[in-house]
Image (cartoon, rainbow, N blue to C red; front, side, top):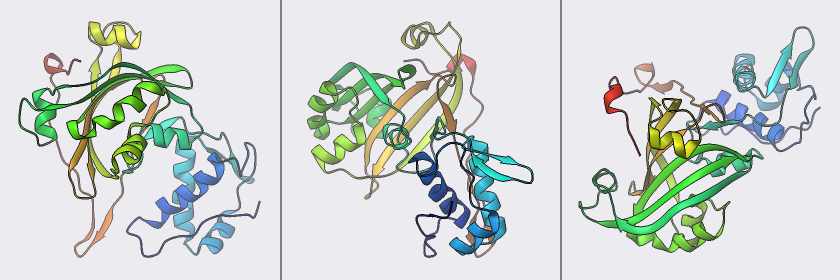
Length: 275
């Protein structure tokens, strides 16, 4: 196997090992390297991409952690499977439909509600609108390869109501692609908060699980290139159906290598979010 696509962007702020992982992952998930194929050796990858052996090892380790490759002592690394089966939250563009569809996973929706209505106060605040403002509400059940995985409620400013016919009509419609197509909105970034919660009675009914079944609660706000909020959502995820992958890395600064993070507190079970 010697056909290697892509190059390392040396002007990018993204670390080389993350860039290399994405390049190799793309070749696996697009079928260029079928299941069972052996990957090029570490020295070959190092020379081809012009990176250190340590960088190659970091990239391969990440692919192994995802389950995409397996390493065999004395033989090298082999393609283990061609889809990671996880939702990567790190990248601005890794927005459920887009990320999973790129990996060859089918994502479909059952639309429970798609309308213009008074936004809940938390959504109006998040979208920087006045309380009592009208906006778009989308309530959906999401299926991954036919398996119910996510219950999600999105809220958007009323100016994006043009997306509603498309979302209602197509079970596979991507919200963010529809925003781009119908409203000219380009998503540039997002902020997300994750919390472990127990399924309430209503969530248990929606996701077809026992009451107090462990779920991951996700709250997010998405912004355009001008940092204007264009969407916020609350979602509840069955991790028996879909895993979440969150990547962190250190970034260079004048003071050395630093990691930026925040602490949002310890959730109280009595205050767990409910739909």
